Amino acid sequence: MRLTLADKWLIGGLLLLAGLGIGWHIVLASRLPGQKAEIYKDGNLVETVPLRNGYRQVIRLGDRDSEYNIVEVQDGKVRIVEADCPDQLCVRMGWASAAPTEIVCLPNKVVVKVVSVQPADIDEITR
Amino acid sequence: MSIRRTILLGLFVAVAGILHAVEYWVPIPLPVPGLKLGLANIVNLVVIVLFGWRDALVVALLRAVLGGVLSGMFLGPTFVMSASGAMVSTMAMALSYSFFRPKLSLVGISVIGAVVHNLSQLCVAAVVVVSSGILWYSPYLVLIAVPTGIITGFSTAYFLEKFPQTAIL
Image (cartoon, rainbow over the protein chains, first blue to last red):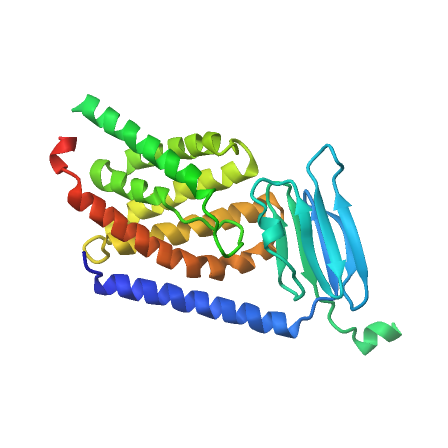
């Protein structure tokens, strides 16, 4: 079994695309430091938490009987500490601190979005 | 002939269902939603080659149901994701098998299947959680899908080499 020329082009092209996408993601992440974390449950915004040094908050989504996720915000980073979902993917995703990053818990339909607020325009301040 | 075919397809569904369920137990170092090894894609590609796309689609759907029941996630969002991923990637592999085959080998077709599988799962995930931002994970998924697709492609080629072609006649 040998790879054909088209196989190699396909593999190379896909890897190149992936590399470009990851590079773009990293560049965006370095330019947009996270300033807020928005926590969504079932598609609805539940809570917005500031991400800055010295600020700490623990938020519990869902009660003891139903599905739950515990979100921790500390010193400009956010993570899901604990959840009862079967795959534990959201917990393993760890800390997030840069802008286009999202922590997702699919079984419980929870999204933690790191948002960067663009610096306000002078016009906007005076208005 | 038809009994033989039925038995073989049943066996393939069983094997694929087991592989599908086992995937949940294999820890993947990169925690990205929608990321799968795609071991069951080996069976899908084998069925496409031996029996054609219709049977492959049926096997893909049945194995998603079987794998969902075995892993205890039947009818949850994870099941919807894996079922749609299995169907869409089987269609993509069947199409590329009939259109690009002399040019692309089984490895290339398997890479297409793996990439489509992971991307379609991520799209379903984005719909489930109502958030388009998780599409930012797609380049990472492609990066992982290419090597896993290569591995499953070589596995498929190896299996078909050893598999007695007379068994399906």
